[in-house]
Length: 252
Image (cartoon, rainbow, N blue to C red):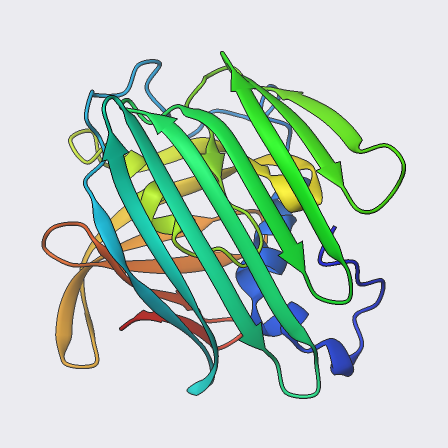
């Protein structure tokens, strides 16, 4: 479900503008997590403890340099549990207002525990994902009498949540990456708003210069899309580029 739209006409430019959602949906075309060939390094069965660091800020959403919206986010710790929360508001030219909200609770080793989301454009939808030892139990309500229910099983509890129009989740992904191991690493993924599972590869590609600044760059790839993440010296996400669609998510 992509905010209850049923067509890809120019009037719904936001489907392309906010293409991190549309592009990551291409993950659904990839082999299932259980059948995908393991050419890259798999996510470790047990990630290193304390993989997360606190972060808080705001991202601007840009299409070819034009500002279309923003997301406020925070990654924080309470005891042994981490919470990643983000709230996005945007408006595409000739399109509609978009709102998205997501809150993800994670264990200290990077395993997700519970995810709650809401999304609104023409209609409003809400949902919950509960994670249980590698199983993502998804529920989505779109105004019908009964919610849609789907379970997805993975071979590891270290599952990435990359939901539509919530870009701070790439900051979480960058922290889940095992920097000591390096190389190309595969992650199972859930896209809760689409009730879709899949997998991606994540790879550090070294220092890259962008607009007179040098960052550590990462490449996130599905079958048909490439997303570039740029991190500062502390591995904080400062920029996301989607070259195909000229979309940039820039930290303020």
